[in-house]
Image (cartoon, rainbow, N blue to C red; front, side, top):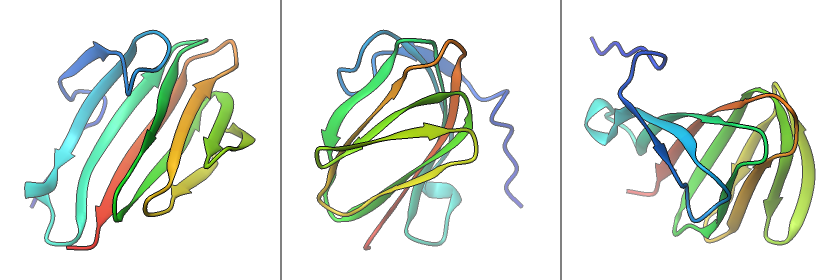
Length: 116
């Protein structure tokens, strides 16, 4: 059995993919926890005005689950408003970014699965 608590995971204040400001970032589980193409789960807290900078992936899907807050998600140049409850899937070889445009902390889960 594997059990992890995302609120108790070791975290660091980091600049994520050259975005704006510092975000609290915690790797909850890494690839060793899974017997599937899932590579990791992160829990990230983004203070108001911070962002995950635009970056491109390879042959994988990265998924953002918005747990709280509001912002803007950009994928391949298209931007949409996001809020608590939204699930965003970055397609293979696409670029994407996320910005907290609200006044509250944006809280997200980040998952990545590849074709291995």
